[in-house]
Length: 144
Image 1 (spheres, helix red, strand yellow):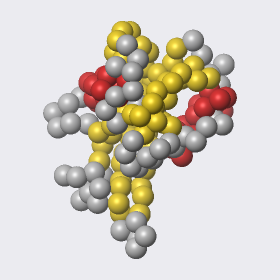
Image 2: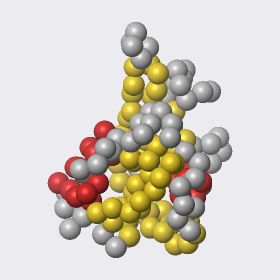
Image 3: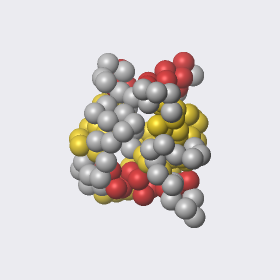
Image 4: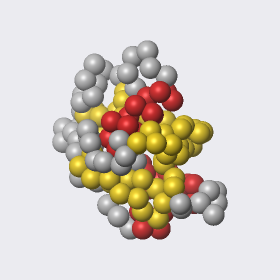
């Protein structure tokens, strides 16, 4: 099943990676969200656990090895084309993770990677779903 114009929602994962009060952002090279900053992540492969998918996707996009800590949020990304057909429909499970190894480098679906403080991330051109998750976590006092 393709990611564009899917017959059913696509399951994906994301990783909010924290280090020294900064989060890791990747600049997306593919739709949805092409050219915008987001957290590393991608689709779950058949037979792959959600946590294994997080570890794989983070490594593929950033070169980092992470430990997956806890589920933070579940979001839907539904995008229609100009005539109203569903072009993308993702169900994304976003996890908290921490780096435990590897070397940071932009790879795979990321054209750039950088560590930024939360308040700086909110000023950047980030994806709508990341902005909503960060706002929700800030309201809960997560980053204090």
